Amino acid sequence: MTTRYFQDMHDLAEADVIISGAGSAGLSAAYELSKHKDLKVAIIEQSVSPGGGAWLGGQLFSAMVIRKPAHEILDEIGVPYDDKGDYVVVPHAATLTSTLLSKVMLSGRVKLFNATAVEDIIIKNGRVGGVVTNWAMVTRFGHDTQSCMDPNVLESKILISACGHDGPFGASGVKRLQSLGLVSTLPGMGALDMNSAEDAIVHSTREVVPGMILAGMEVAELDGSPRMGPTFGAMFVSGIKAGKLAVEAVAKYNADAAAAESQKVSGA
Image 1 (tube, helix red, strand yellow):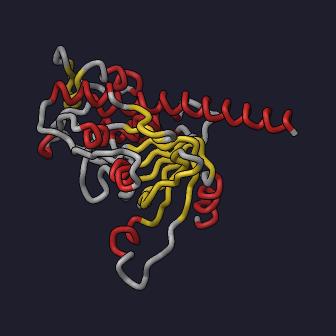
Image 2 (cartoon, rainbow, N blue to C red):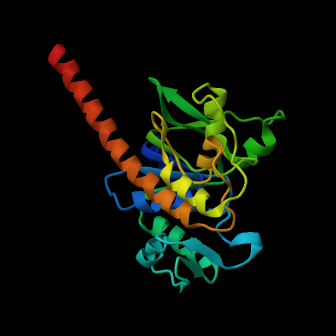
């Protein structure tokens, strides 16, 4: 068990894509990336159980409301729903989250490090180059005691930060960008407006600084767009979009690295 775990850490020490946060957006990004067998992908989640708030719908109710066209993801992974016209309802949110998680895990192309916290990001050559990690229990409770442990490092070509809205670990990616001076302001999400919030989240899922793509409700924390409330369509679509952007970004990273190496060789 120990050998297998540390072999995984060794294999992912230099990843193509790291996803910080395994909520609905992070899992969707992982699902999209799992379609690409040539990519090395790790997803890091501070909780023991991935899924974030997607195990229940709004207000601790069972059903999950998903605005179209996000229902296309449900069709793809085989999750049943009730069609209500402009939106669909999954009778129990756990059906969707467990199915999405199983698709990611059974692909064999994404390594999940749960009970693991992202404590910091790596900056190399003016771009985000990975994450600094620790056991989540150490991050939460150990750093103010004499049992403090130094962290670990996982490098990547692209980081997808999908850490959700503000909270104990929420929006940790953009908070760190602000403290480093890489973004000037962090207004926090605005008041609830469900329809405009979903549109804004999907539209603004993007590479916010070189090497770091923002997805899900963390986008609202940076942009000040409205909070979304008990609807999940934009989370899944944002994650899928982030995964596709990451594929493009890794391809560009590899092409730039190859061009730089060729120029170096020709100039030698």
